[in-house]
Image (cartoon, rainbow over all chains, first blue to last red):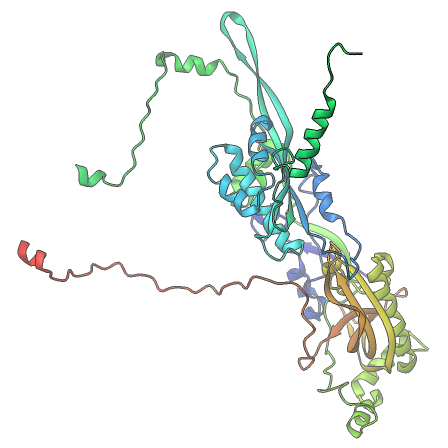
Length: 226
Length: 305
C-alpha cells in the first residue's frame, strides 16, 4: 500500500540543508494508530538537494578494520585487537610529516600522545588528534578493553594533493611554488609495545655477536695469494 | 607600574627585515592560490543558514525543494500493539507438578479478544489454526536464526520484519556467531493474537505471540575471533515469547518474526565479556557567589591601622 507524504517547510533552511528529522511527525497526523508506525520505519531525507560527491583520496586503509577473523580455538593465544585510522589531505608537507610519523613508531599510545604534545611541528597537532580518534574507535568499536593498552604498530605519511602556484624572481624569472598536502595513517595494536621495535637499534645477543665475529674472521683472505 | 604588569607575559620580536619599506611589493611576488578546505565537515554544524546559502551558491548547488513528496510502502508496523503479558514464573515449574500443569493449561480459546483476532486472520487465510501455526512459527524461528548466523540477509528479510532486522543484525555485524537449536522442551504454543489496521480500515496487520521453551547453544566471537558471549558447549533452556507479524491485506504477505516480549521477572542474561568505563554522573555545582571576604584582623594589619 502506498501513501504520499507531504513535508511542508516549517523548519529552518539550516535543517532542510542538513536533511534532518523524518516526516513521521506529519505522517502520524494522517493515521489512526500513531504508535503503531513508530519511529523506526521511515527514511525521508532529501537526496535531491545535496549532489553526490564521490570519495576522494585513499580508501583502502579503513578496509582493514572490516576484516573478520575466524573464531579462535580454546588453546590458542589470544589474538591482539588492532584498529587502522587515517586522516586525508592534511595541509602539511609529507616530507615534514615523516619526522613526526617516524618518531612515534613503536611507542605506547599514552607515550606517543605525551611526546606529540611537546613537539614543535604543526603536523604533530594532526597526528595527536588522529591518535586520540583511533584510541576512541578501538574502545568503542573494536572490543579493546583498556584504552591505554595500545601501541603504535604502524605510522606513516604519504603525499596528498599538490597544488602549484607561481612566484616571480628577479630579472623576469619565474619560480614554482608547491602547496603540499599529506595523508597520515596509523595502526594501533592491543598490548604493550615491543621492547625493541627497530631491528637495527636492538642490542645484539652474545650468540649473534659471536657468530658475526666468527664469520668476519672466516672472510679474511690474504691478498695476492693463490 | 610593576604591580599592574606582574604576571603578564610579554614577547618581543628580536629580528627585523633589512628593507621593511618593500614588504608590500615582496608579498606581491607570490601569486595567492585558493586551496580547498578539506576540514569543512568539522565546522559545518556551526554555520548559520545564510553562510550555508552562500557556500552552496559558490559551489553551484541548487537549494533543496521546499516540499518533498515520496511514495512509501508500509510493510511492517513499528511496535507490538496490546502486547501479551506473560504470567510470572512461567517455565520455572515442571509440567509434572500441579502448578506446572495449570500453567500449561492456558487455553487460547478462553481469551475472547485473541479468538476474535484468529477469526479475522481466518477471513484472509482459510486454513489458519493456532496449533498448526505454532509448528510453522518454530520453523520460521530456526530459519531466521540460521540465516542470521550465516549472514544471509536475503533469507533473513523473508523471515524477519523491518523492525526486527536492525535489532538482530546491528550488534553482530562485526562478530561471528555460532548457534545451535538442540530441541524443543515443550511444544510451541500460540498464547496471544491481535489484529489492527494502519491508516485504512482494510489495511490489516496481525500479530500472533508464540511461546517457545527450547534448548539452545549460543557463542558470539568478536572481530578477532575472541569469545565474548556464551559457550559452544553449554546448552541453555530458553523460554521465549516471540511475536510474529503478517500483513494480511497484502497477498504476498508472510509470517515473520516481529519482536520478542521480555517480561520484567525474567532473570538477566549472562553478561558479555566486555568492560565499560562507567560514566560519572554530572553533578551540577552551585554557582559560586563572588562576594568580598571580610579581612580578619591580624597583628600586622592592626599595626598598620
